[in-house]
Image (cartoon, rainbow, N blue to C red):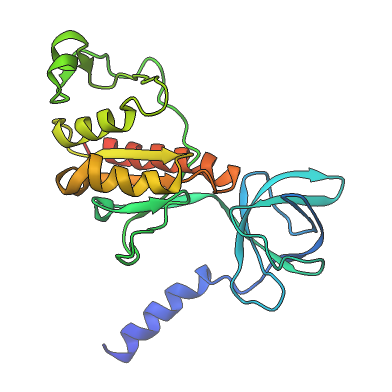
Length: 250
């Protein structure tokens, strides 16, 4: 690359450089809430909290304010956070990286791969807080969707865009039914969110109910019952955001 071209690239990059590190200090930790003096943030912003003797930050979300103090809730681990720990503002709400490379992958409640197959490096970052479609702009439900299950397709026909609840007690086949639909439906992409499941049930669902064929065109977002409540809430938002992304792709 010629020197002049390199110089032009560097000159264009200068206005976008962020050379100021805006941070605050943790004052106290009470339960699941981290209280800090600064930084300047708004509710919903994501911050990075640096635990004692570690350069690896924890992700936390701003949930409120008390007088001049900022209240954040970590999305996961809190061990090592202490008074005096740095808390750095990112200036962004919680978002997730979405792309067609997600197909066949298993993600955690924050949208990060957890299947040991490497990171997803390309795609588009979307906030999980999207406005719902205008009610007058929504498509009417006029076309059936095939589930591949004759009892449903023949007697309880579902439409494209329809919301359906499956309610039943433990051990009567809800996960089996979801796996059958994921394997046999004529949908191009399945986005499946497993929130509050026991850890052993996740692998059972993937290997037994979903199977290799179903996984190839599915994306799983998993937040088991041992995860913090905020992560389980985020899992539902992450799955919805991924589904909305593929919806917009047509």
